[in-house]
Image (cartoon, rainbow over all chains, first blue to last red; front, side, top):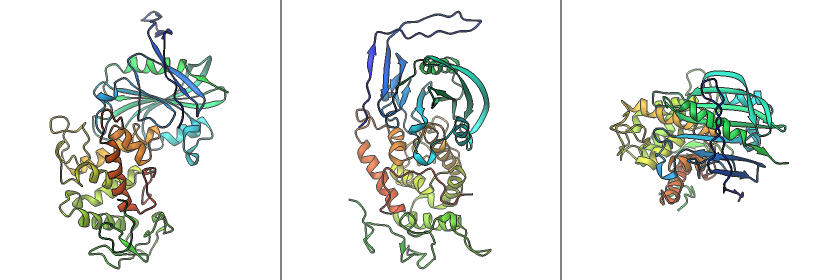
Length: 189
Length: 208
């Protein structure tokens, strides 16, 4: 049984929005830490987000709603969102990607991709190049919209995913939260 | 009670005997994939002369026979072709969609969450975004499970999918272990004794 260590930290969770329109501001609130012993990484997530008890073993998946609000089948209530960060090693052996491009190509083969572009991320202590893929599930509305960020940190490949209902007016904030969680990512030797 | 697939066992549905289909109404029909998973032929490898049944044809017969046996009043019996074709196109085992409907609504005979909603997808209730027909419901569940929340997030086994689908948090859903067991048993009826809650279902029975 993998060990998940969660702890509340009186550690500043800095939501620092950098843009021309909103000055960079730091909001210190409680942050919680997830640590994966199996895959040797940790990350912090903000108050109001909950570790998803149904996540794949020992990988980070958080929801912006408590388990009591989960909706049968679709999991996400209206306004709900999920963020997951998983390393390539968490993929089944036969599906384990050998490169970021291979990973992206495998993931997007059956998906409705709206855009794919190169971006720069602050991941842990490093500024790293990343690929951002945005898209949505197939089918008639309502469907999920999602953002995937693929990047390497200290030589290891990660994919960070944000899922939310199409049309969510807070999508921009959710994407910023995704980036902030990635910023706290730490990889252990 | 686990189905042990003893030939003739009244509690089990094993449509294959000695490599041929033995289900009601289809006795003796060659089924190249009988035993698949236990040494049989991969349906993807099925080839035959022009005009012979395709892999999908045989899968439709198999699913139809299964439903006719376990749930003769199931409305899904008339839509097995859609289920198989949609599943193959989406990349999901059609037997899992059948098993999920079996667990959620007794194969569509006990629908309580909106019209055509045999999979209890609560994004499509009678009041909110109701399904217009069976085809929409079948496409809806296939798209959901093969989408980002499930397959796209690495949830490809029965256990990992249903843990989210049915909310495995025991405080919220104390029935979850029983529900998972029920789903797994139905899937085992369709697949055979090698199937388990850890079986991956992210594949087409008849790849296109």
